[in-house]
Image 1: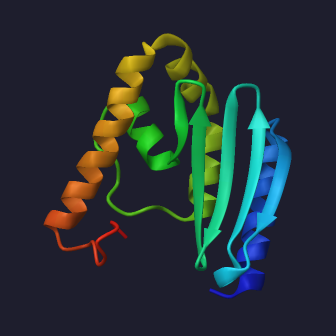
Image 2 (image 1 turned 120 degrees about the horizontal axis):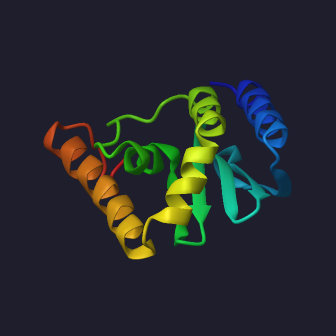
Length: 143
């Protein structure tokens, strides 16, 4: 994937998120590997669009959890099921996130913070262990 393609995908994602009421608060470009991080906010929900080594990610953080986690992990807690093993495309994640934003807001508002944090950690741990068990992890860092 070329930088211009990922720039276009990031611009599309920013546009969709702005359409859902998010405000862009930062846009940082890394020197190495043409990495880029765009952060947007809507109320207590912070969204990060990351380009890391040509791969694109949608990451979410709320006041319940002070760490950005990918939308697949959040969706697994909304759905009460294990997350997908592989990340979806940025376009698919942003579309799903925007469509399910109200569900995420309800989850954050109604579930005890410790319970939600346990769910997020368990979903991330399950995915890591399952990817490792299936031989999908190719580095010691889980990627």
